[in-house]
Length: 591
Image (cartoon, rainbow, N blue to C red; front, side, top):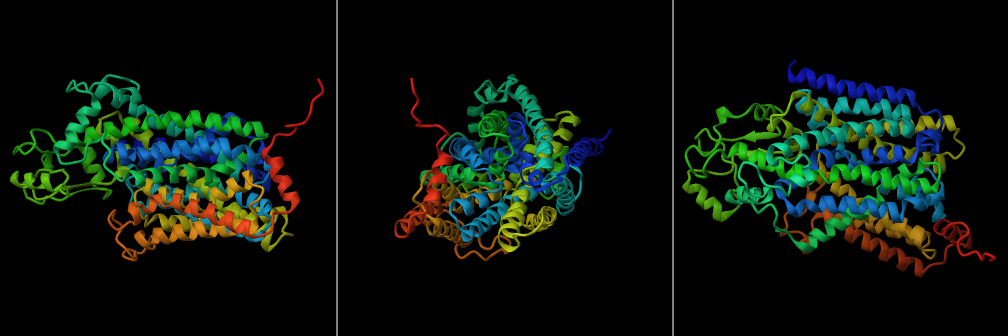
């Protein structure tokens, strides 16, 4: 059986499973559509949260970005995992105790203001739409290679699949579909990693293999990788080469952005009790750790494999680089997608893959007869190409295709639900037409989700960067706008409606302004006001890191405005107290 047929069978079976679950778990009420009837057990909710959380950015793009940068991109690991701990400890239980369906609903009720609710909806939509672009990018990349269709067709197929189970099942259908998707994606991620770790180090546990000896050379794997990349003018894999301030701000932006992303927060509204929210968070951390402990090894081993494939002998020797005509089949497969490109700049028929921006090495490369780097590798293909590079069995390659799609579709569905819930429940039901029937609201939610899918698909055709980079921007927007108001809403009785509104608007506006200054209107090339380079950034702070600065402004403005205006009503202060302090705490007990 050829590889394409096998891919179609495995991916088709996974889609059939998702469709079957959607039909079985079809939402029949708004409670089921928004919060799965609050009947999801903690273990299953933890697994669904893991799938919701481990998006295309985690499965497809993160290891690729780590692979081509090394230590400096460990910020993705630290920020995303640290942020989930922050969410689990500081927000999830309290928001579940509040007992609402959506994040804007909490903000509207806590700050006793429809205006606050509407501003929260705007913040949610901006962050979620940016995030979902990264997922649709991952869907297009995966389909383009494994089902041998162009990216546009792949996006349309993925959108159709999401439309079916998300619009039909709502949170109930999405939750149980995500449980299945977690099983698919974690299996697809770990099996190739185990094979590759065994091949390179003899250790079956990838995270331990990363610190083991490289079998072929006898050197520690990371030392071998450092040698290979530095010999070709790249920065050392294990060294720190970037602005430390920017690295800290980026990590913090990912952390607090994680805790402010509505599609993850609403997962904790689906469990029966407050205690179950904490248990769900604990289980989710276990399920997430299985992938995040493996990702650094996948990145390092993939980089070593691809470098060894291209550099076949002594650097600078006439026969030292792979002849283009002898390129392996995986290389040809990915060339057809347009995500891997070769340009023979010196006409020698061989592939020169090196850092031509390193002036010292570029001068040496000219002595070899090299006229510039000739290979362009899209970072998003590395995890998907890894099994082919390592020459693993066809069924493993097909499984990775299904896993990549599961990761992208699971998160896309959660984001689209957050968007549609905000529109149908927080705008239509709460502001525009409070008398709408439950049936009408459910229809409005499905129409809103359909519209969100169409917009996300269109935007996914022109992403502003690699999947993980696009997602990082979404985290910055959530960090600057949503996280501070949730924290103040739970832990401060003094912050009032004017403060919350001004804080959210300030955080969102200055972050969006900064991002657009350096990245432009995402989908219109050349519209940025300043070049997107470290030299042009304010104090060396990248657009993806600016969410932390936006959050600081949000907190500061909210407190300043609140101090200058009236205190919240007493019933609101009592509400905050009841959400934050367990029932019975501080009550005298007779002994």
